[in-house]
Image (cartoon, rainbow, N blue to C red; front, side, top):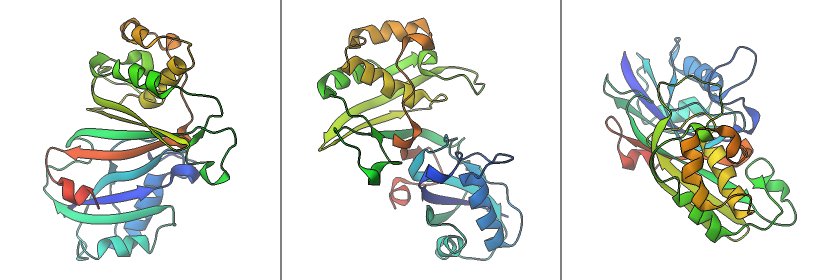
Length: 255
């Protein structure tokens, strides 16, 4: 059976995250059903990361093994015929036996979107965090810089999944104002449960004067989740970038 990687996008509004659950509809379970209808046999599907209910992905990679003779060029079209409109497979590729959607990852990027205006936009209701109060982008940038580098990120982690280590390396954490939107892009070699949403909440706290950017290193050293900012809503979070050590290249991922 050949190891197959697929690149997809999804709007996570209707789903309880990626991971298959007993009673709830998830992206993984929906995609797995479509794959099995297409290839004609059961598959084990591995995604590049767990996402919470309501989180979106502009780039997401999964892999499975199949003996189907459908070509990689035709496979996305065949899968999309069995998928709802909020999940789309963009590309497929035959990859080496060692390729693993999670294990082969080198780093990934999330983007958080804040709709910062006095009035909400109904078209962004489930795709951005509506925040009607003033935010100081310069302060947010100063706070974001404090997260760069290798740290113990237990202070911005929600309990809920077991990990061997809470130490991660953040390569960049950029804040950009785009008209009524503020977008925060963060790239790291891995993320803890709710880490990005808590980091964004902490940066927003700094903007609101509830803490100083200079306090953030000490807050991280404390490892105390109660001292950092709130976990912002899932609707503003998108997986937007993936980098692999092997198997797939940047050009394939940019489709």
